[in-house]
Length: 152
Image (cartoon, rainbow, N blue to C red; front, side):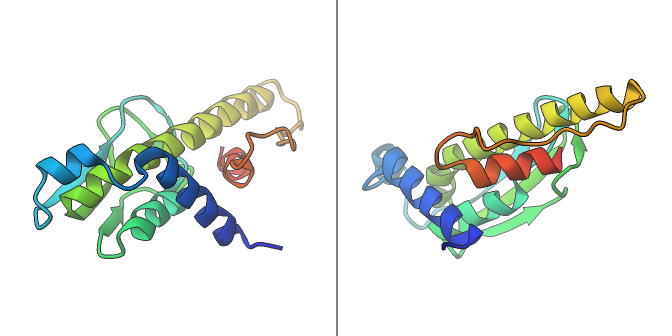
């Protein structure tokens, strides 16, 4: 039986294989290999942030020399304009990892936000009912989607 980290690593590796294959040719062609930069994750919509651990794992799996700093934890209520994360290091690495990181964080944060809204509606209605996840998840994303429900 694989651990959660091993399953996440397989997902990350598959996603990188699909997304950039043997490299993002535009980035590799246009950005010098020794160019250093910083990227910041800016929130555009109000919601519940989810996916801190997997985001760090994505960056560091691709390039262990990247410096990842998170300013919020999973479950934080975020609003437009909040900066929740910054990453410093090789610009080629930043550009090749950002799409995967954004896709996963958007999915997890969307699930956490909706879960939180449903749970809050149940609480406001005065019930003791709690929102639970099911096994009906996206192939390959089960662990992350279930985690997002718990965060929400």
